[in-house]
Length: 322
Ligand SMILES: [Zn+2]
Ligand SMILES: [Zn+2]
Image (cartoon, rainbow, N blue to C red; front, side, top):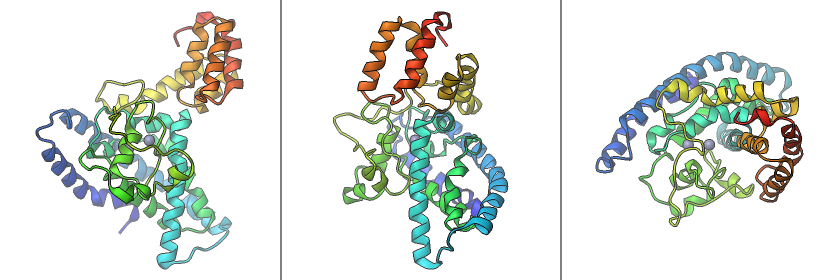
């Protein structure tokens, strides 16, 4: 079988599970919505099409790296598969964390988070812009350390296939598995926009990376998850959902003054634009106070860059409301 078709081959299983979950929640009307589910399915098909095209270009690139620049040749058998799985799952963690902290990548990933519902069909909600954002770049180290393109594509898609099953509110915490695997409970917290859950739980299959690198938060009964993004987008239109953050980002790049602001608009944290806008609407001393507060809270980590904004802002009050 062509490994690029793993997700399509599993589609009947996914659709069956969605049907069972929708039936399970039949007396909870808010859990599923036809418009939301159709939108998710459309986004999945758009994503699959873009992915198929991207593999046509990227697989030869992985093959070229593997043939000319690989450092080792990985073993076959179970040991080889174990290494392949662990390395890719770690790189997925890096990719996913970067997708939440770098706006260029967030512009694609935001699609997955933009629904205010969470059910198995939410797993279908993906962006066709991932190849443009550069998701494929994150797998290049695997070719360099000696995994074949087929192994790379296969394990990337198996990782995503696993993640389908964590998009549900029907399964409670799973005991000791919460220490090892990305579970429905852990991923529910990832999809929540409550401040305590934001930018946490980036796991693909193994949650050990979140626990090792300080990004783990357990789901708390005291604070139920509120799903969605901080700046909600109320539409089911797949085109709008796919491109809204790209459009806002492009507008910021065009209208913000100075190369540093433009670079931050592209590659800074997604919330940086709010700090920039706040800096535009305040006086210079107030900016300094607000920026100090932001730095103390550890929210931005880019004080120098934002301070640059406030200086620009003092001369740019007319640029309010971008
Ligand atoms: Zn995410
Ligand atoms: Zn998810």
